[in-house]
Image (cartoon, rainbow, N blue to C red; front, side, top):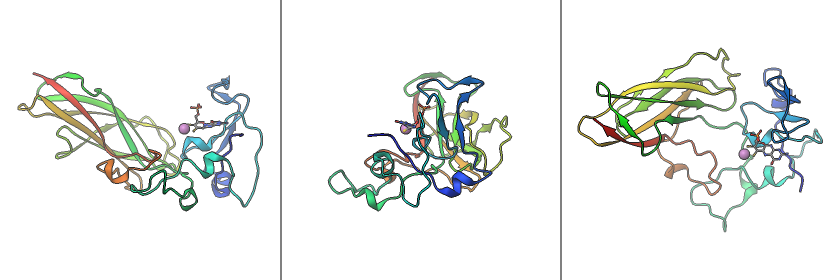
Length: 221
Ligand SMILES: Nc1nc2c(c(=O)[nH]1)N[C@H]1C(S)=C(S)[C@@H](COP(=O)(O)O)O[C@H]1N2
Ligand SMILES: [Mo]
């Protein structure tokens, strides 16, 4: 079964949509794993639409009938399971929701507390070219928050902010606790933000899983 994907014609033709057919990356031919000799890049859209080893482009009123367009990469209500799922009832995922990740520290890491604070860093990203305008971090499981420092190296503007946004923060932690839960949530240029818990957004394919990133660490005083 050949791989296939569809994107809306509005995205494909949008002069600001930046959809490209790529034959090289960073001045070198694409590697085989990344789609040599030719792949589509659809920025701001779930990567499953960036078809590698491209064979054909079809302009059609019908979506691709491929498994990955029709019966995968779709979201459902938390109660839907593999016995009750009807893939025809949900649209294929295109633009992804806003998300962020804490890259340091890692889950379970022992952290030295300096002046009552610990350091965090990570990345954030949103679909549809929406820019990350803020990343909030918490050192107590989400009760208290502060804005992280967002690295403004990327000049891309909404709605053409396709890349990751890096951030770092120094967050105060309780002198009383031996373990704390660090959290991060990002805000994009449409003021979308992340849901608090995965329970609320659980779905059988595990997609669109953009709840707060939570990392539990052990404090060394
Ligand atoms: N032909 C083809 N293209 C494909 C896929 C595939 O299985 N076959 N996987 C898609 C998915 S789900 C992803 S996440 C990206 C991965 O691209 P990368 O390997 O360059 O990171 O390719 C997309 N393009
Ligand atoms: Mo993927």
